[in-house]
Image 1 (tube, rainbow, N blue to C red):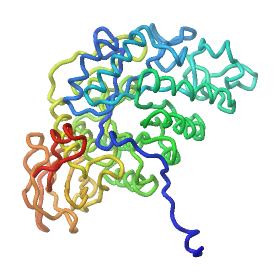
Image 2: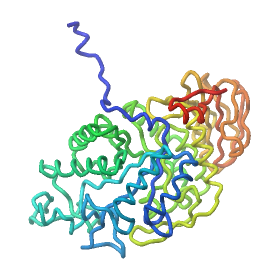
Image 3: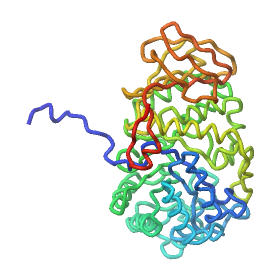
Length: 459
């Protein structure tokens, strides 16, 4: 053996992403608040609308029966699970859930379930059947997750192989019996990584699955999860929107994302979710006038975009966690914003997920603390974006060679037209929190893709 063979690099990612996530956008569906009925059957009537929006993966928040002991509020937290094999009667029954998944599949959508592995409700069936499977405090008592106010749940002990077998078999049950396509895993970093890696292997014996971790760690991408949260991106964008940071803070995030995370990994990009909305405020409270720019960047930048229930309707309210307060579905311009962004993303392979898409490359500008500018170029297509992430109008020009070329507006009607040619001396005017997105090269023919299952290109 040549001595150099011992030093050959190995891919840090050993799992295979399912093909159907290559251009996917995730939609987090809060069943309790999604319809006046708050049921799977009622939510099923929205699936065609979500497919039309361009969504690819539906994430259902926990579907299981909720514990009663130490319950918070009237209805309790869906993350306080009483039985991992049950269906919350508030939402319907097992057949209703199966019907929802079948209807989603018929429309080309995938469905993942929210999975709570770290903890259970105090009256979970395992407390009686297997009390030895639970974590204990120094006095030997059942305990909630330390340092949090999650006093409606108690932690499990993953040093127990019997618990690991039970939880893996429970995950497999939902894939086999309901045909779900994977899981979003709550506080995934609080559960040992080797559990998730083994569970992934077992689930892949049934069918290809997609796993999303509510965590931010590169090790989770190696053999367990397709995607992890980009919490740092969300916090950084909030700091910029509120005047506590400038664009240089985003450079730090994107450098970290490029150098510290595997190329094939996916990071979940979001401006709202159930936690942010309920406890910290709506996207309008969080981002103010910067909300459109934040959404645009979340969709066209590197990462896996996510929409939370009601964002496409411009929902102005915090959705309570422990009570019912259904979304008021009204026509809103944000639906068209998302539709155009997602359509662009699906038709531009340069914007696709993981290594199906092209890397973001920084284009330096004369407004480096206010304007984020970059290209994504796969050799056939190129997308150039510049976003003014400040409350001041700017006139900006760019340096280097990466951005030069002939373009068309990528998002007609969402912003003022951009220049058709970017030359060395071209400058762009951007209003406060304004953006321009330009593209060149052929686009995917979505109609042909639906007919044949493989991307076809059109001019």
